[in-house]
Image (tube, rainbow, N blue to C red; front, top):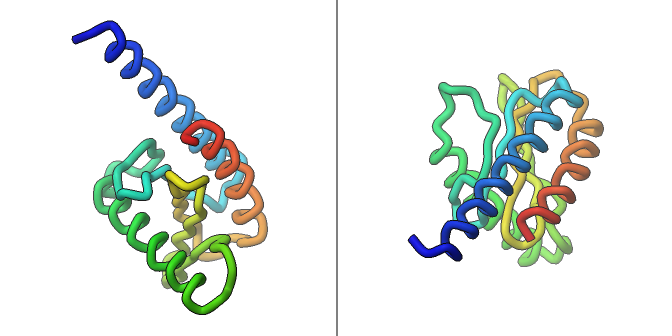
Amino acid sequence: MSLRRKVERMVERSKAEELKILLEALEATTPDIEASAVVSVDGLMIASALPRDVEEDRVAAMSAAMLSLGERTAKELARGSLSEIYVKGENGYVVLMASGENAVLTALARKDAKLGLVFLDMKRTAEDVTRLVG
């Protein structure tokens, strides 16, 4: 392996570690968020703080698909730029927020979550993710 490739892998690893720290901080400061992940718009997991029983690949694929559909829907129906997407189920919420042009921040929130606080904290984290991912 070339030195350049080794350096690139170290940078990628360090970004993933920084992203995981951001996700853990999001969950620590926002008790209504139970799990979170950063996913590429192509549906690949970049970093996660998901429970062991949650399949990362499935979360990544669904997050990318929902983001794409949400962006298309907002555009086609002249609603402007997509801000966030959320799905409410009987056991809680799935909230997605674009993080730049390359990633999406996904969070699982409790059913009694204060969504205003969840959105606020996610927006701050999404901005940090954008700086790291580009």
